Image (cartoon, rainbow, N blue to C red):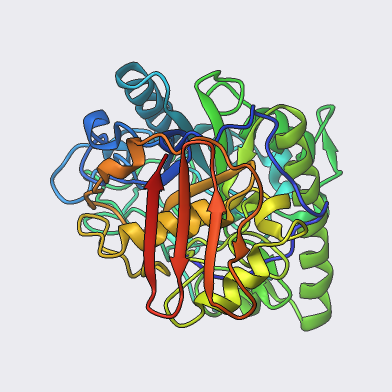
Length: 415
């Protein structure tokens, strides 16, 4: 997954759900099982469970949506939501949507890609030929071809790909399998009485497998169209699209404009998204691979900054990652639970979650018993016990939280 810090329009944003300081309602993970559904017992206890598109993909010989004819990733995600909620009704479930890639294994996207009327909503190859990616699927007979740009960077394939299809070829309807591109410049283009932006929000994000499903509480909006081009595509994508730097900047600006409307709609409809979380970024969206906001080497400096009323930790929805974070954590063997928990409780605001970002498929998630303890509610902000003491304390109704940055020693004392 990309690690770009991206701009997001609209400033600080927080979810509209009720505030809770209950620790076991303040956790988050992003699990994925590429050989089938994620076992609901493996995510039990976590407050927010955010499922990636690769979940139940059907890697290797296993069954999954990549082997289905046609592919049905969207519906399989909805089925995973139902499994998870049935086993753990208090769990909040988020689902994956790509913000710039038009993925035809999502049924709602595929039906638009298959209909020539809607082709202006998607970006096309330049028309110059000699592209760096195939226009046709060579496994199909007759060939399935499309002049809409598509590559195979993270695409199921036959016999092998990012998800293994059954013979004779991957099935995404009448078009070749690949990652297509939404056209940000067409956001307000109306076709059959609906603009791309209206369809994106009302059907793609808030359709029956998404936000209109009461069990879906949020989203992960992957990728972006940056000033140098779309993220996570084949390296010659801008050349194959025939775009220069000026055109790329115009398209990028249009992308951020329509995503600003998407984020606003998500909030207005009582949902939230990973990208609206804060993990220390100066501006933009939350990293896919966040890290802890306080570490051994930054302890006193970070806590002095975070223990203020105008800190984003207080005014934003904070995501705090277990150490070491940044896509390097083994979630089955957490090594700094006490320090991470103490720092989280010191700096957290009304909306905050401790957990993990994207760590890949097939991971096991340790659930520390200390997450089930009742620390009460904070009675004020964290503070340094004396000038330059490098010892920080925060009083809670049922506990006192301390971190001695001189030795990086946490202390949690129950009252």
